[in-house]
Length: 484
Ligand SMILES: Nc1ncnc2c1ncn2[C@@H]1O[C@H](COP(=O)(O)OP(=O)(O)O)[C@@H](O)[C@H]1O
Ligand SMILES: [Mg+2]
Image (tube, rainbow, N blue to C red; front, side, top):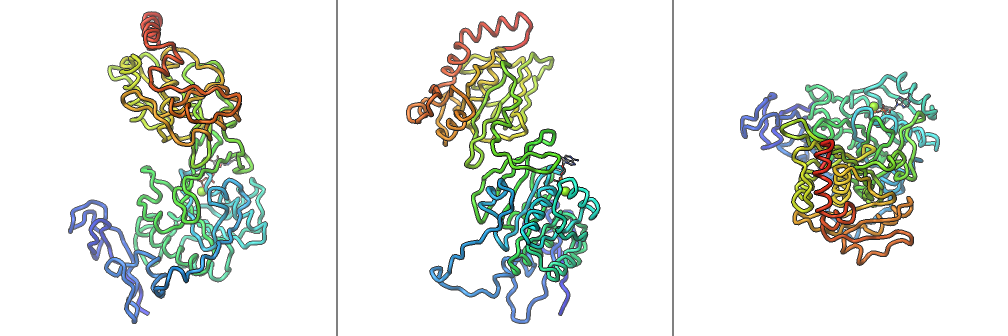
């Protein structure tokens, strides 16, 4: 059989070259040329893909398929493999689907290898043959971790980076589950480029996915996240695999969020919460309590927001710090929030509530390393900024959510009742919400729900209105030059 040869293909225009080029000679784009292997053309024809390049295993796998009526397709219910880690099963939609390929991405040190080993150990305990392919760490290093985690030692370990060898070993040992740690360290003999390059990562992933699909055995791929936040640089891997899980969290703190970014067999945006401890990652049943555990009492600049992660409510603390700036261009720094959103909200409170911050540095963050993207955080952000600027702590037991428009109007957001129930569960007694929500929502007993229609109404409710706020502002300015 003819050996596969390699070509260099521009990812933008599809032009092929015999050697690597920094700039595509066809379309002029920079750094878009990637090495690909071309499968030898089968005698029966077929194959295909871009210019015959083996770009998609799905195409190859489906080559032998024939069209048939959708009604004739039996929907086999996927017997899922439960991992024994409740939160992971929840994110996956009930467990690992046989033959599925899951990509687990995240920053270095976040705990990808740890969770991978824990899953394999749990499954091995249940009698499954589990194969850990380590391209990054030696078997001794993995053993050290296994000892620390008190993991079952019946996990098979294979220190190997050549994907052809791995496929051979997998075929020989026939494991029930395979973990590849990590896909960036793997290389294929078909390609000349270095391990970790776009072409290599894609080729290796495609070969491994093809094997998982043909054997029906699930595979977990660990991938590093580049600075741009994409897995393996380009997003190519995300299309090849069935599920993409993303590990995130604050490295200093112990809390880790596992998020399903893509899931062909379950819900996306579902979130699992873990805590990293000496014995590895443990499920966190009540993350809100953990997140609020260290909240300062009676401090200004702190507001509690019931946010929704996937389908699950999570109480997080939004913190703001507003100080007099020594700079001509005051600083605006955010952590866990969108900086542009905070800038817009600062402009809205300036215009609608008279809070002038042009001589102040402003720092806004979400405690616990959580990232909040939803606009429902607007009211809490404004309340935290106002609280810090006026040095007025918000009332104990208060929580807020709601979106704010440019005209200063407060808009309703989804999942209001879920948010209120979570706040009530954690002992909160008062919620400031959009007026439309307050009219419709059925609040839990013991939770006082107050609707606000505008930012000014919010301001009046929390800080006594525009005039008093302005007075506090000038007073503070004269005193310590601290805020407002
Ligand atoms: N002795 C230890 N005790 C507690 N936690 C540890 C210990 N050693 C490592 N860790 C935790 O494990 C993390 C590294 O996990 P790891 O699974 O190797 O990450 P990744 O594979 O994502 O790079 C560290 O950031 C740390 O939080
Ligand atoms: Mg690792």
